[in-house]
Structure formats: C-alpha cells, structure tokens
Image 1 (cartoon, rainbow, N blue to C red):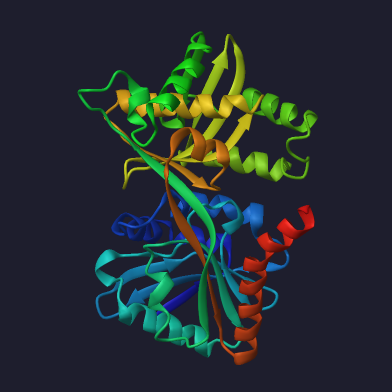
Image 2 (cartoon, rainbow, N blue to C red):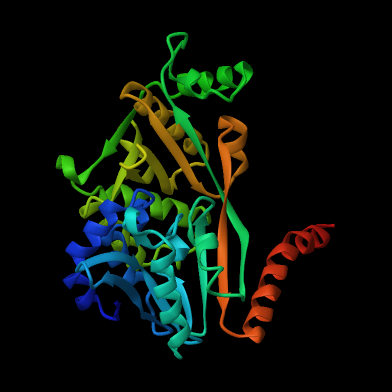
Amino acid sequence: MIKILKTKEELVEYKSVWDSIYNSDSNATPFQKFDFIFASIDLTVTGSQQLYVLLVKDDSINKWLAAFPLVIDKKGILHFINSAHSDFCSPIVCDEFNNYNLYDEVASFIKGEEKIKGLKLDNIGTSNQMLAVMKPHFKFMIAYDMNYYSSIPIYKLDSDKDSIDAFRYVKSKRHKKLRKSIKEVQNCKFVIARKSEGVPYPEADVQYLVNKMLSDGIRVKEYFSSAMLSFWKMLYESNVVCMAMLYEGNEIRTCNFMFYDEKRNEYIKWLMLYKEGRWNMIINIMIADYLYQNGGGNINFARGIYDYKLENFHPDVKPLFCLRIAKTPFGHIKNMCAAAIHYAKPIVKQIIRR
C-alpha cells in the first residue's frame, strides 16, 4: 500500500513511523531525519510546490517499509524536499525490504498517477540504489553527475607528532603550513555547541556574522532571509545540527553548522559563517583536532570541491548524481537536453572568459 501525505499535519501523525524507518536504514543521512524534513517545509515548499510524501506499507505484515520525502511542482515533476540545502538526498527504506518488489510497487504507483509527469531527484550518492533500481521500471531514465563532495578520515597513529599528521594524504610541506596557521591563532577558543548539552542557540553570534558577510558583500540579503535564519535555529533547537565555533577573545570569528551522522561517526560540514575567509581553514583544523582527541571519525566537507579544501587537506572526492525519469518520449528528450546543457555550461563559461 502507498499513502500520500500532503500536509504538515499528516506528516506529524507519522513521525514515529518515520523515525522507525530512519533507524532501520543503514544508508540514511541526517538530511533524511524527520526534524530536518519537517523544518524544510516552511522554508522551501512554496506556492509552486505541494508536499507529496510517499509512505510504503506491507499490509501482509502490517509494517511501514519506506518513506520518500518528495514535493510535486506545478509541472507534475517530483523532487526531494529541500534539495537546494540538502547535501545528500534519498528515500529512507528499511534495509531488509530495500529490494525489487518495493520499487516495483512505487514505480507502478507513479506510472498510474496522472498528476505525476516525471521525477528530478538531485544529490544522490554514488552508492545509493536509486541510481539503478528504477531502471527496470522506467525506460526513459537518465542519471548524470551534478556535483561532488569530499571527505577525509581522522584517526591517531603512534607515529603522529600531533593532530595535523591526521591529514594522511597531505605532504609534510603542507603539514608545516597547517601548523603555522594554528600557531598564529593559539589564543583562540574553539567550542562545539549542542542543544543536547544545554547550550542555548548563539543567536547574537550568528547575527553578527550574518551582518558582517552582508556588509562585505560575501552574501546577498535574500540568502539570509528571516525564513532561513529561523530554519537554522529550528534545526539547532531540535538537535539536528550542532555548531563548531571559533572565538578570538570574546568575538566570534567563524561558525560552522554541522550534522553529526552517528551511522558513520561523521561530521558533515554544512553552512559556514565567517568574518574573514581565512578562518574557514582554521576551523577545519580545529574540527579535525577535536575528532583526533576524541576517538577519531570522519570529516565530510559536503557539496562543493573548493580549491582551499583540496589544496590544504587532500580529501577523497566522490560524485553526486541527478536522476531524471520521464513517462513519455518527449519528456525523455527534455531530460537529455537538460543533461547536455549541464555538461555544456563549463565549456561555455570557459569560452566567455577568453
């Protein structure tokens, strides 16, 4: 059985179901947690979109098996909720039921629902079954790399001089530069703020950095809308995100909203606010040191393989994909054109720069 949830009120009724499925899905990330999805609705589900969450149940055993956090736009295309601000998008599926039969039922529903014209699903990881599992059911399907993310493991070895050596893929010359950067800010204070530990949301610090980035022209006012600022606070208050914060004296220099992925012992770096760009590298080193001193783990730099990340830390780079499914040949042609434009953009930009 498939049930469609179209309102926030309906979604709340199924919170316990959602949490149970999430806990049973070893591949789920914090971006699929109920509180993140729920908080995303007011921010991103606008007049041109409608909530369209699919819940899948096996009636024979009276068990909910999967949830697809989707919206449908005015053209009838299904998207993941808040894909613009989610680094990793996916349905959640109980591991033991993540198989052909489940997706056959979902595909049959999509085919039979006239309102649905197609799917455009962004930010799908390379190991996610969604990249292939729908192919037997839809002949008009394409997937292409749309972005990249990077990550790095942090762990101790007896031969280490300090936590800088935990950047294993970096040559000794770069280690020296990283150590020099840390020496220059020895008087700074680094903390990870968590609501679960009784730390109130640092609203004044956040607003200070927002104002600084606006005045310096780093961000535009539309990005820091009241809805976005409320979204951050809601995620912190519900323990979905924590915040890595760096102070020089009593003044905040940078803060990094992070998701802790307990399934992978990984901190996913999300939103960064800063007074000056140089603080971004420094707080990354501080986060690595925190992991190093507390049993190790992974740093996930999330979407965007920016030069300063690659040059300073040499992380592993992996792709994220866009999956497009059409129900008609004409829709498939449109999707192929979209993919072609995606790959042509870098070439056009290069020509324009010349």
